[in-house]
Length: 550
Image (cartoon, rainbow, N blue to C red; front, top):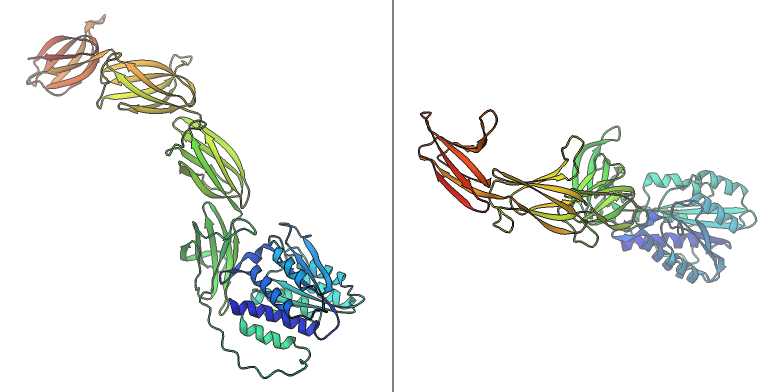
């Protein structure tokens, strides 16, 4: 990292030696302040390397040299007009330029062609000798043609030169902007590894120094980089790198550029050594993802930047305002570009593609939906209220008596209002004592079943209210013993008009016990030889009745 930073500083210094130090002309330094300058080199943002390099170089420039400073992409995101001459060319400007570089924000686009044109005009290139030094880590993103501009400035200028430092660009990317320097008679330096930088610097020395320097010792072979793939993911352009909870999917690229075999899937901060070749890289965080094609070249270090264009959404599902979050609440989010909505439970924190997020919270029978706008790089935290009351249901043999317990207990909740055919809409159901329901506000009827006994209890629900609904069954327990019986059946004693009795329940056993409404009953015990015995019994509410049929 230190070698790379020193190399950048050396490149800029030698630019000044060949332009400022040996010719009386004015110079404007143009610094790329776009969002891509947040990408890192060995763990340090490129923008910090650029600042340190400027500070080092400017300390070595004579105080009477007239140096200016221009930047682009430092005030607005997405603007191609964000170009500013911050320090006009003047002697003794080193401190002002250093302060200006230190205060820059790096967040915008790369209008490098327009910036070079404006710098040339500020230097009155059609009247005086002028030099522009462009330091960029990216290619033109605003439609400009740097090659054509170089020819134009050379043709119309008195003695105009543009020197270009390709800061961390690949060889192919460097070719696309080197023409700007070449078409003006300037120099292009590929500042990506030490050996290539040294060779380029030799070509920049247009005149010998006043005193010849001793022959330098042969430069050592550069160490092979530990990693050749060091990607960075951000939620929004200019944002901080994502290093926790994110995933990287690495695929071999097919001949048509689509995904081939999966090479690996890694998580969090990621560095790797990949074999040279073509790849498809997918960066993911939560429900957001972005895909890039990438060529790994021998001897080169790839440091791609992935912008997810996503934000963070935090949802607290509550039954009513001020109530505790319900851990079992279902949170369904239909986000932009989703094939299927994502489902979470309880408090939900997730990364989503920027846009309108449709969030549906379900607590019991209560449902609430909201559409929440989410901007890239932002966090939105919100309560969503399902609007329900909480009900606990129990059945009692008599009002104020014993609570029914056992496997034969069930509850069904229906709307209180009957339909035109006299039926009611069923809302939900549950089994067992202490059955719990979360219901939206309305009038309901609770239908309780305990074995053979059935009873109804109307009730009303208000949002945020808790109530214990108790259903009096007006029932007792009937215990029957029939030695030698193969079947026991219970009938109402009263016969209908056809002389038949209504059967209430039966068991293929010699014993049968069940809760049953208070009243008089006939019990028939059948034996395997088709003979039968009958007995009668009276059951009182809240009491146990026992009958033996022999």
